[in-house]
Length: 312
Image (tube, rainbow, N blue to C red):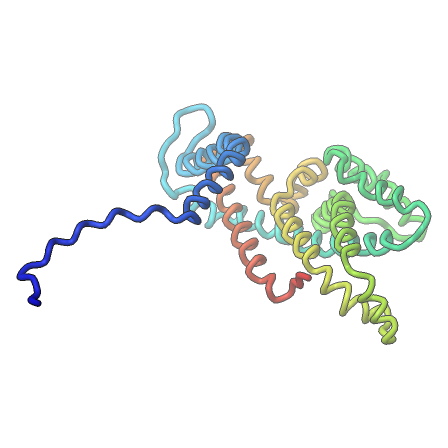
């Protein structure tokens, strides 16, 4: 038996059919896209397109009336070197530094108090949550009246103890603390609800086992409650920081950025640049600078959460 002299050319193989898993993946992606479409359309129209418009405006000098004039990165360079912009960022950071610890400590205290079995607990939870759903205009005007240096209740109460109250929103040293106090009071109920939900998710068996072992209330709070509450704490910190960078309503109503610019924050400067000085391009550039700062802070928080947040 001899081998053939030549071999027949190999027939090209047909393309293999797409794996079933791949087809299933595409079908799943299409289904998700259909369900996301109702949200994607308004998100694009009312968020993404305005953001891109703001980015385009930030590269121009524009007074909202005449034609835009291209300045490139001129607005950004001017704002970075502007001492008023740096002061606005410092005032915003000082607001956050006072507001965040105050609202968290107050919210945690209320949550732990209302997590106990007591009469009227549901009613108290509703009462403490009421400021959250109240308009900032109402809250700011109420606190402006309470802290009125001449006729406010707070200074009147201090006077009963022989203490001369400060000029809360007329003194540059006290204007920001008065804004912080009003802001923390309004947001206390929101933080309380988030932390209360976190407290109720902690299994009671852990606390009971620690009590059997003789752990004091402080040690149970430090080694059981706080670690297991860290996911709720992380959420509160992220949301409060973002809200802190966007503080505006209370500042505008209570102090108007004064006295002497002592409470001029970033968002109120954006407002003034647009509607007071007619510089929409510079205001848009400042908005993007603020967005960049908030984004960086949020990314740092998300990356750093692995070191202190305990899930499960």
